[in-house]
Length: 406
Ligand SMILES: [Zn+2]
View 1 (spheres, protein in one colour):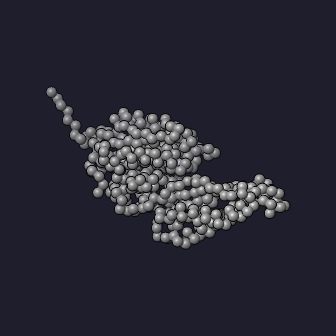
View 2: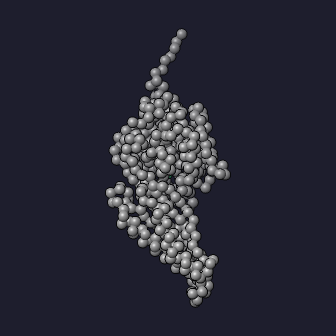
View 3: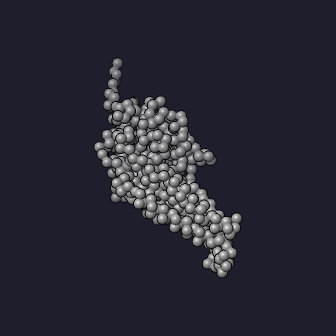
């Protein structure tokens, strides 16, 4: 009787995917129009069935309408912490953008792969999904978790359901690698964001008799001026050596609307304002300064004209900053796998901040450049896909030989 014996090594080699497989997977993922306003269920179901064919179960957490889902899956030993590979499945709209080819059909030109979401961030998810088979066959000692979210591009909100489920029902992961496009450089920290829409409700009247009304634009301008001055004070307290660009928390007022005609006292003035904060700066305290100013200086004057006048606020966006920690298991693992010793800082927000808040240290590390994200003709360089493919291969090998990060 003839018995064929395959070495473990040979088995591994047989199921090793190629960079070309990752690109084929990217083509498949780009084909789903997962613009944030749409359902992502077709993409999630497809990934779920790919995983289930490998014997890997998925956990889904949904939005209220059940039209969108996060997917969580664990490969390797259950019941112990592992490394989370995290990415968002949604993409920004292509509305009004001029594309040279169909944004939802992957197109290769000059060593680049064009399509919506190629760099932000289906390229990373494609590499991770392509390696699922070799991970499942590798008999991992440290589990690898997949965490794919919805609604990242509209304020990093979808992932919260996944993180709550993880925190409440699963063993605490050791580290998370959020694959936003960093050109395969390690990023250890990012700024947070905190913003409001404020509306001044004035009293209208003929512009020839301003004392009979309350000019909402004048009051709005005073509030905006206070916010700008606050920005100068915050900047003066910044630490030029913290690695962020710019190094201080910035204030912003990017949208203003008010009035109906030049000869009518405006009854309404609405503006968007907020902060992009460095870790350690308390945006709640900054917001409170603005609200206190309004309560002390603006509202009494408005109320003196009419009880119906006043100022209201609506929270628009809140994302904590991600605080760098060079000694975290996440940075230690990345240094080990990549040989890169520096970790950078970025000014855009990511889901890594929510993982950090839940106690999971992370890094941002993924293929493609943020410079190509959100633009028409978004692309990822083929060599970035190859680099990410290599990295996920190394991570798989590491997880099959090591138990935990040390
Ligand atoms: Zn992104």
